[in-house]
Length: 289
Image (tube, rainbow, N blue to C red; front, side, top):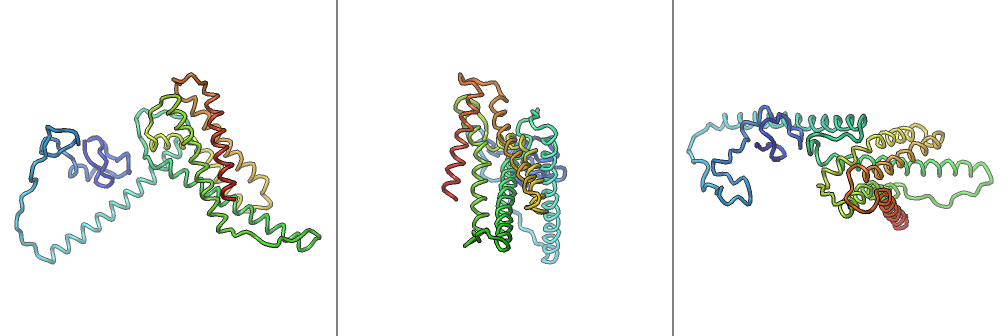
């Protein structure tokens, strides 16, 4: 095993790309390999492997200040390049994950925890921001359109308009709980009734990977809202509710994805989960709005 110098996760010696942060390991793997027989305590519960009191010998050397500054500057430039390369690799791995799950949403990977544990949260944040924007912008456009018709007709004018910034913040809170509620309820039901032992962060990434098509539909609805929220109102509603239906389908299919060890049929587990999610959604709407 060796340690990634960026995320400090333990990875296999043969890895040339860190599966956690996406950093290339070719140039860095030699300097961060950990040898268990040199006094390093590799396991917190390993009593036989005692750490040695000292690893290095202090040597007094005299380095010219000019050479020291030049070396420090070269190290900073090298570290910046490695940081940029690491960030680019993270984006590449995320979009690779996105494309693979768009083609095969329920693909079973042969390697456990192949992708980062943060991808699920990234997809939830993306869906939350786009949904809050679409909803707030539609309400703002419809109110503005109604006010225009009221000024030129006998329709009653609105006495006040909502604060759209505050509305956007409340929709952010609502959709964050809404999108996180589906995998959380599913995780709880599988853990309680089906006795499935999952690590939530990695399981969330696999679960949200099945909702990539829903994210694409939501992005289409966002673009349509940018173009013309009033004239494309019906189309936006159709695409938006289609992406909500995909989340419901994903929730239901997650109950059938593995063999159940519960006496409760997966169909009834799905109904229980959807009722719980509906109660959470209605309660949150009443609290926020």
